[in-house]
Image (cartoon, rainbow, N blue to C red; front, side, top):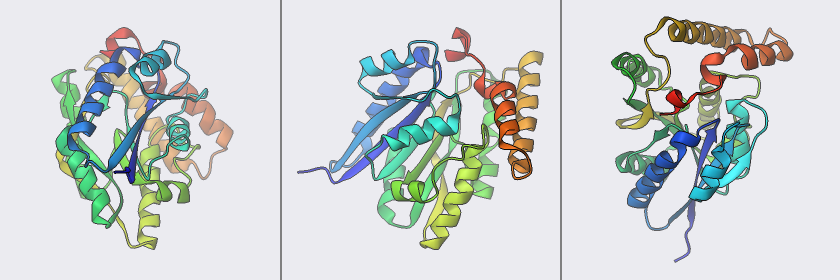
Length: 261
């Protein structure tokens, strides 16, 4: 039987060589166990200007490799999506993976015909208790506001193309802007966006430790990201780019080996 539904998993990766293989194995295992037999899938890794051997590691594993030379999460996701063949696009962070149960939930979303896309709540593994509580505390807020982080986002390919993907003006909080526009488009075709919560995406708690330097970096980056998100209609794009690339260190700093574990 010819496969008639195609899922493209798009993973932006910046210096993720140490963690990538184990997560690719988990993603592939979940897809094998939970996707219906008529579904085909591909896994695309967009190497976002890594200085380690991320591309080679992903290539050796068997993923499709797409380069994106400019460090920006929006560009990496858009570049990966441009190479995708799927009728549905699943964006996953490189340090995250779905369980088979979550994959089944994602399939239900696609097969219902009611949704233009979805996000998920998160379950944090590894890292400190502080980091787990810091990240998982957002789950009730995400469900209440019907928004989600960029760690796991599913959308129809046609919807992604209609809203022209992720904003290239933003270097953080781009997923909230994406979801806002995706919801707006969904309303125009009588479809909804939802946040799945029974089977959260599993993600790493490696960033934002309970030490002064990390807390300061996390606070300043989040405040700046929020200001850039709110004020972007008023600010020159060149200024947003400069601040985004240089000062959002919580997301765009070089990773050391401890952060990739």
